[in-house]
Amino acid sequence: MGTLPLHAAAPADTDAAPGALDRVVSSYTPTLRALHHVRRRAAHAAGGGTLVVSGAEAAGQAALPGARSDAEHLARLLPGAELLTDAAATHSAVLSALHRHAYAHFACHALGDLERASGSRLVLHDHTERPVTVRELARLRLPSVRLAYLSSCDTLLTSPELADEAVHIVSAFQMAGFPHVVGSLWHVDDMIGREVALGVYDALDRGDGTLDVARTAEALHGAVRTLRDTYPQTPSLWACQVPAGP
Image (cartoon, rainbow, N blue to C red; front, side, top):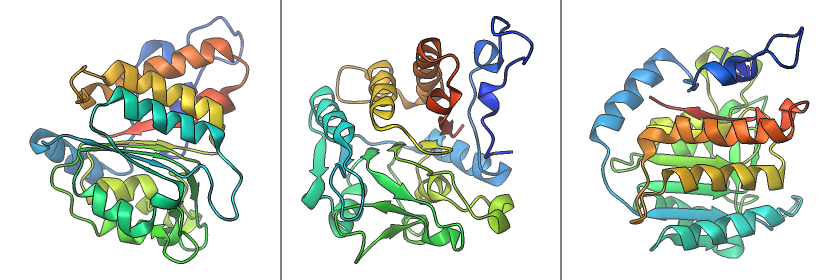
């Protein structure tokens, strides 16, 4: 059920009839145990500071021009944000920086591994030598983190054999400590992903360098509704990104 875009459900008989997106603000959870875990984490999470990671140019992958402008905009929006782009966005630099920030934004490729779900990974500068995998992310212990926004493709993708166990990049970030994670059910169009991300951060920004992460689902809901109004017949564009958390 967690792999279906239930928030995009609507009557088939007429385009004018309201659908799920008009009635409820949705939030997903990989498992009930994960929901219990992140609710407890959300009640105690504290800290500040934002990490912005951009992988616009990664070996063997198509360029992501929207990722660079996305990252630069967030760095301006959130004072004091640490920006790691392209060659600076390495395995060791990113994992080290995650321990120092409450919020983490990734604008990069992600690769789902259908044969070995624990090998699904974020595509950083040195991903061919040292990939940041589900296995490695899930082993992190990050006590002060609050929100991870993954502006990447297929971060909820898992192998059919492990569908009930929800082993994917989003659940790995939750296991590491992030109570709120935004991920994707399938491929994210580069420029659409940038538009949605900027809408979410504009809604969450408190103006002092911190984010009102308790409103993550609501902020994403608003951004998705705006996008749906622009592309009503193309849910593949606007139904892709979903929030996971309390």
